[in-house]
Amino acid sequence: MADWSSYFARVENEPISVAVDLALRDAAPLPDKSTAYTVAVTLRDPDEHGMTGAGEYRVLQRIEEELAAALEARGLLEVGRVTGRGMRTFHYYGPSVDDVAGTIAGVMAIHSEYAYRALEADDPLWAIYTNYLYPDEQQLAFANDMKALQVVVEAADPGGSLPAAIEVAVYRITQEALANVAHHAQACRCCIRLRTDNALHLEISDDGLGLPAEHHMGVGLLSMRERAAELGGTCVIEAAVAGGTRVYARLPLPKE
Image (cartoon, rainbow, N blue to C red; front, side, top):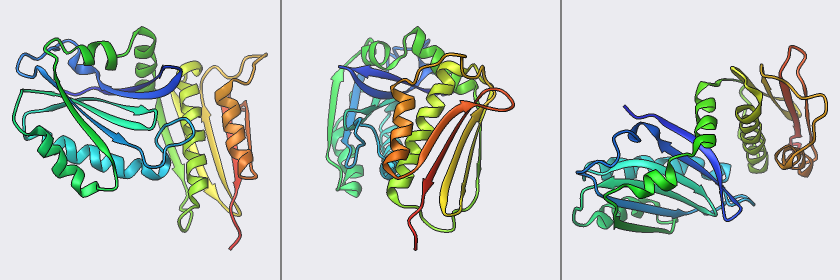
């Protein structure tokens, strides 16, 4: 049974997000899947950190699902994906079979707006999986914390589409807040609330340890404030009344 989880890392001081099937660790390497296959897709609209923009998330998800289905039929198994540095890279292992590149090309032809590279190499020891994709001890602890965290979303219907800049800001503020919960809060539950009137209101609260008496704004917390300020909004990070931490952002919506 698959056991997918995610963690963050840095490569040459640039952020990446890694998703990996942890369940394969004890079985790896699989002797009948000794060839590593990689499909590296160039992001069309990455954010300033080289990560996926909110507008691309759904199409990249479709590409992943379509690639996985087509390659599974050829005997390949998806083991991980890496996002960052302006790329999303999908990793597979399988037997050495003919024209895998043609199978990949058939899927990517449907998404011709995306440039990509397809690579394959002998990797009988599964070095890419073990040494690159699989998390170290600290990263594994983060991945397990994310799996254990119960996230509840309460969102009212905005009554129409939101401006792209608002969507991106909500996505990134939420992403940073969840990363902080998983890294530092020791929380069991996190609630994300969204509502709109003349502004979009985003609240992320947890039941964790809360803010220390003396805390300093790191890069991640400052970036949340900056994203809100760029849109004429505000973002506060404070102790929640019932314990834990509360992030609240108000992003004004354009007038009709």
